[in-house]
Image 1 (tube, rainbow, N blue to C red):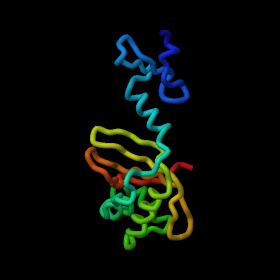
Image 2: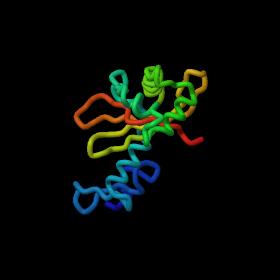
Image 3: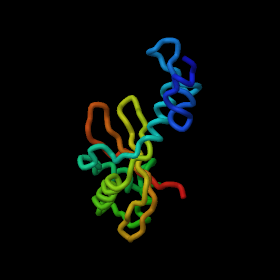
Image 4: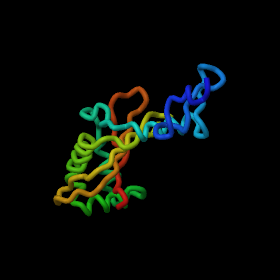
Length: 159
């Protein structure tokens, strides 16, 4: 058989050519390699919602000590952003609920595997207390062996 007869996917899917190599159990993934092909496939095929979204968790400290914390060295820019749209530390539950609703409403745009689990990236407008809806990227993490997601971070999408 020639290479065309063995092609499983074309360039519009995972890799330029997936075909059997020398062994019937070995795949050739073109110039990309297996991990790059898998990541590319995950980015293109994740028209889905966050798994078990109704069990997703937003840790209170993720909001109070990071996303709305102006003294936090890494989170203060995020705090300025979210506070600028009306979210407040005193009512941190509003931001937590808005992020949960964001995950329920929008589809995953990217799945990023890590050694510890998978990150699920969700993008879309986030309704804020003042009536505006800034575009936000939220990253949810599902640890290996777990069935529910925990909020890892959220930040503004570049316009």
